[in-house]
Length: 185
Image (cartoon, rainbow, N blue to C red; front, side, top):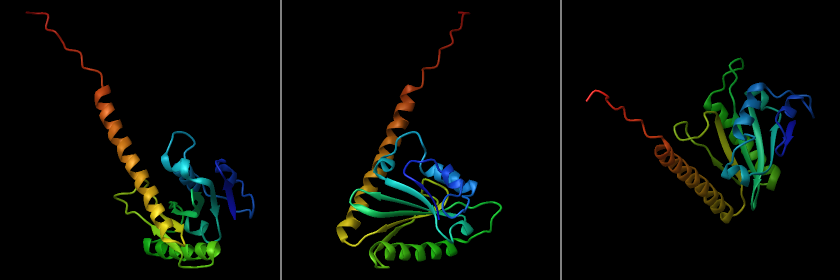
């Protein structure tokens, strides 16, 4: 399994550390788009101990697994698909089935209960990134489920508020257009 830890550059994955598997370039691009090195993000500051993994079965489907933790939630994942123009085409039904199987396996590995997970998948018209991805949260208690919804609500509200403020300040910050005076009165 190939892995990069923390905020380390994803290029380490391309060297094929542990099992000698090379991380395809499009997966490195996906990693960089999910977690850019500059700028600030509400979620990036909450996502602790991020790791990008390529478990068996993922590279063949042009997929990768991002593991992280949130405050009071130890087992959080993003299952990502980054289609390669050269690779085989995988249908959304196949991806959903694969991701569901993986969610069950992640829950089993984490808490020995294959049904102790929560999935979040957004359609293309409302998600931030164009790639197909699914969030998996391993939860054992209802308060953890409520905590996830709280964090996501705060994150999305912050994004909407920041976008609205940016739109308002951009309109105000546009310099006034010079008035052309007709010199021939």
